[in-house]
Length: 183
Image (cartoon, rainbow, N blue to C red; front, side):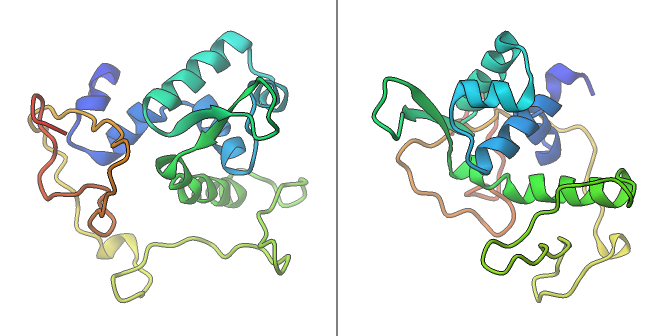
């Protein structure tokens, strides 16, 4: 699949990659989820060139993952705040961190471990669960249909509209939003 086609793919993983798509955007979201709000703070934490950071922040805002708000301290600055869409990336960020901790970090290396604020205990390993709460192995999952389907349009953020998505789908109906259909 061509990179340009990810946003129009019927696959939710491909669409997610189109929206987030690169290491810088994921690291920006990691920082935003854990409280970084201002352009200068992102730039300092990530060491990212200002022009690249500006482009990534603009895309995250356009995708409805971050929103710009007046600074909480009343100054003339604006802050980048995760939307509900952005806050939902917490599980993705934690899962990537846990995977990296297991497979990419040597046990002798110092490594940041996510802990529960109230207890100081490490966060439990994330896992896939059945609807009944039973852990699932990869052998127990039905393979998704990866056959190319008709192009679909990324759904724009629903401003002011409450959503009640089906469990685990992130969509409000069983049908994908097709190109040209109201979304």
